Image (cartoon, rainbow, N blue to C red; front, side):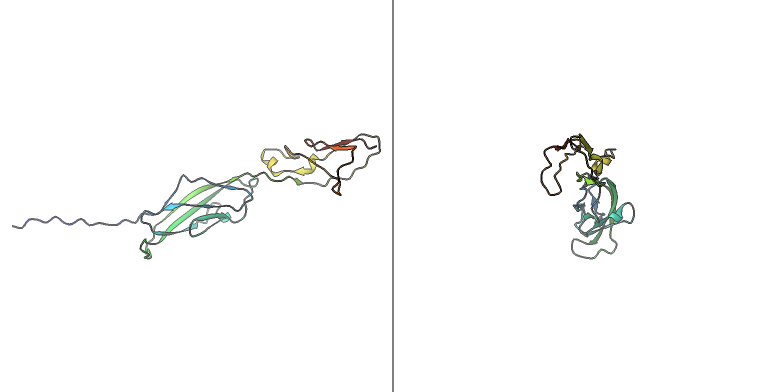
Length: 193
């Protein structure tokens, strides 16, 4: 009688989907066009491409085939400071360069945090010309004529918090000696001679 042969084991290769770094924190400074790389790992070393789903805030983003995520327009922290984006990664070629007939894909949803940048205060309303007779004390507050987007995020909607005001004549010359501007309050003070 012949000895019974053990069957040889059959090795079945399992192609696993690419994996995202779920600990990745995405932060982009407002008013910039910074990009961030979305790294993934494919255990078999297959070539992958990236795309975005049509859900969440994805219309604000674009992504390259190699995983570089970019805002389509510079974000503004004061308008919106967090976005949600769903990234899809799909295998297209094996590590040997063969087309994958039934590619694996995977998706992950990230929060993209927009970091605040100190915006420049703007002139919100014209500073009205004023006249005063000589030898009469003059006092004129210009702080309410300026607006600062950053101040609104702190719940303030008046003036410019922490501003340092400066002024010159329209010609660029210094103010007359009788007139001064309080740098902290934005109040002109003086008595014309």
